[in-house]
Image 1 (cartoon, rainbow, N blue to C red):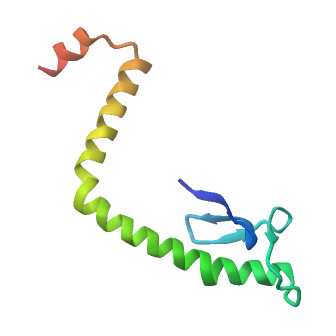
Image 2: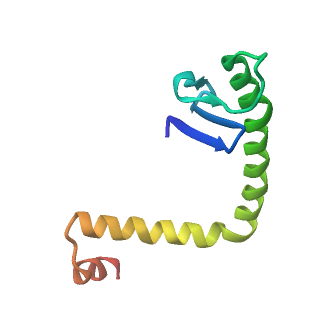
Length: 107
């Protein structure tokens, strides 16, 4: 994955659309974002920039670190197995491989 675009909306506070690429470059889509709070003395671009770097990214990082620890400790094996099964099913379906063909070559 090279980049991610996201829209975060918190009722009566913010509606922000932004993108982050694989080199941590960030863009805020001003035309699609809104400051819904009463910060009338701050221009839209400044507010969105402060919100993204001061509130949103630190919160997302904290959530990621919390979930990452749980994933590594509890779910990694199950997740790897699930992905493995999905990959095998996709290869079998995309290449019209029958069960007999698969089992005869795996044994």
